[in-house]
Image (cartoon, rainbow, N blue to C red; front, side, top):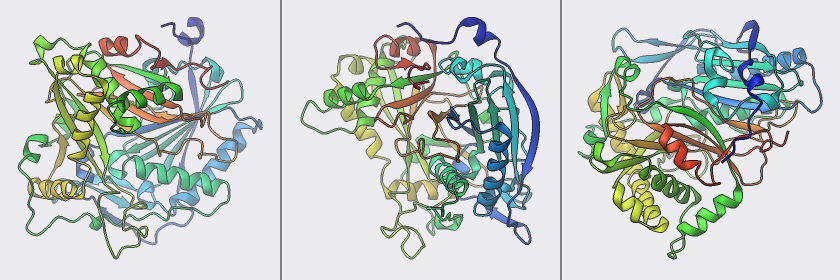
Length: 463
């Protein structure tokens, strides 16, 4: 498939000059520092940096200076509701575990200027756009939230938001970004954040199913930084059209069982992965993984959450990893509905309250320290982990200078143990998806062999 990308001369000359770094502090600071201990599920985060990239064409042609000033003012007010995001993450000397010190340290905001227009930004080859601190400047460990605003020659801007994973997960970060955009528009925030980590308590005594010993492992930051990688990994961005999403959904449901669109999409990827792996090197098997949000599965009656007893406003990590294994041969030979059934069964084993309570208890039994899924740590053979962000805010993030044309995840991590695929709604708001991926070259080639994964281009963003 032909890739619609910027001309080579403009791709190679992409540079960003940084003009200012500011520390934005809460407009209503805490009277004295407060220590926020991490929950058991926070200790499963791996402390990875999580970065979101948003592009704005700035149709009203606001000046860069006015955009920066507006973002600073609204961020300062938003941080008053999200004090941990303006704190520091330090090591507790007694437990050697990380904890959040809410001390009004502030968030870092970096200003940059690119020498190209937005339409010449190479989004397909994310490797190139992320290298050398261009879209995401070099991270400062003293600030768990860092924002970079980059202006382009056309008047458009990009914003990257980088969070320390110890602060929360995608749902938590999505709530923060929506709150910030609502403050910027002088609207009341719709999510009053709940930072009370004690809601995810272990049982007394803690108990768990033995299968968790096979799925998770205690690890150190050194283990995470040195996780094994068997492939060269490429960072790519794609557009998946709503017509292809609906087509896969129909195919996966052809046996009469109505599968979800994510189950259908996963089955398609898993079958493609089977064609991109040398089965002789991996016992003829491969894995598919999914990040599962526990909020809809965990009930905390008596708390100030939503009326259904869920944890919609909880700011922290409530994630687990579901994993399914299959032989390469059965994936190749199986129909899309058959593979979708395997996907459904794999996710179902984790998408329940009992699993999350068991996981909380398993972590309690292995503290102190960090824990991680063995698969994510690269100890389970060839794997692709899918993160579904179908409810993640994209078009909602209007900070007063127009809606974004794109919002997605982009990772600055250089070393990962598995392949990743992140799905987010397209800025077009038509049911299409933006997909960012970290994959080995053979799988990239397999996924690009038909028209489902379309390399991201300015045409898809309707520049």
